[in-house]
Amino acid sequence: MRMSSGVEWAVHCCVVLSLAEHPVPTARLAQLHDVSTSYLAKQLQALSGAKIIRPAQGGSGGYLLDRPAEQITVLDIVEAIDGPGPTFICTEIRQRGPLAATADQCNKPCAITRAMATAEQAWREALRASSIADLASQVNTDYDSDILGPVSQFIAQRG
Image 1 (cartoon, helix red, strand yellow):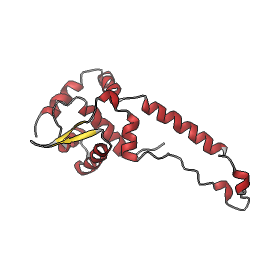
Image 2 (cartoon, one colour; image 1 turned 60 degrees about the vertical axis):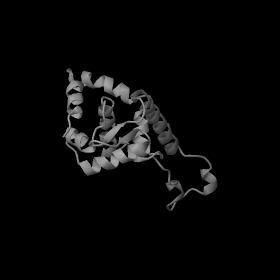
Image 3 (cartoon, helix red, strand yellow; image 1 turned 180 degrees about the horizontal axis):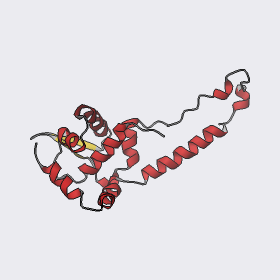
């Protein structure tokens, strides 16, 4: 299964925003991750439209989480960035070609469609079970050191 790079960027930004006490400007998030500010801005706008983050006015502006990190799932972010639609769409290829099945023979989903639907359901359940708070709690373990402290200090700095 392939997701856009915007999903990765958005999840990382939400983990960072879970540490924020003040709004974090787009440019600061882009600098932290060494990514394109304009592309990141599009991902943040999508997250804002989905009510995952909210823009804050004044000062240098920026973003904050719109609800507690425990209430934001990875699936929420994936759907905000890549859309809520299914990852597999059956085009009924079995009804094409020289040995095409008739519509009457295709009155239920084929084994391929069923397998894909089962896999997607498991994937969505796994993403739904993982919150931004869960991910944030695991970050320091990934680095075997306190990386969140320096990240908090970095995003708190202006400029």
